[in-house]
Image (cartoon, rainbow, N blue to C red):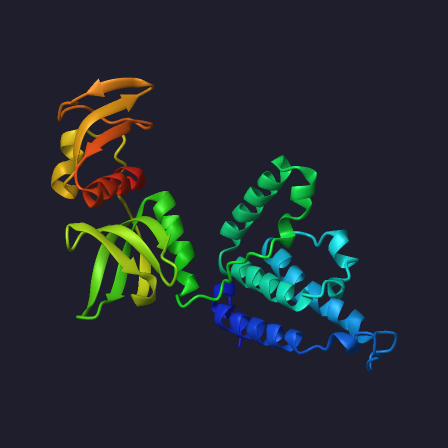
Length: 280
């Protein structure tokens, strides 16, 4: 069996990572120095080799980066909690293969943050015992196409299974949100002519369309019609630090404008999502 798309392998990688983490938890600390059937390799050496290439090596391969020399020389088992650290690194490795571009961006952001921290804090950044595991109850293969559609303003065709029925929707994707136990995609739905939040675990399949939705920038307030579409009203606008009170319907929006909105919190949030997500 062969796979052209690495994301097809994700369910198998997730299962293998869980099994590897289970095996690691079962390695007794008092047997790390014992010999193995591999000549000149004791249990500790085999474990270090295993941890290096099945977690760090796997992640770096997805990111198309060389393994740092420091990692190849590290004794991972010197940390009493090496098995937990290995499980967390496996999560990062599997996530990197899900969306390598996003993983590279996250890595770049982490390096920038590390670069401005005090030396002592930067050195301990990777050792922080706080992890967000990648094994979640949602289809990870949906994340990348939705993220790219948001960035490039492509419409999506969704086949969505709601409790009452399965339907086909054409949507303008605006954002991805994590609520602790599930992910949702917020979008303008052409069928409902309203904002909707779509649970990723209920999207049976999706298709990225060639058609794009237009940005808010360059359109008038009348064309955007925030009040009718969200319930919020524009009472003022800031442009380049200058206040424009009570802008008229023919006022044309520009990139960088900040709107003063009034309305119920839900209406204001819907208007912010519409403007920031640039769906019209």
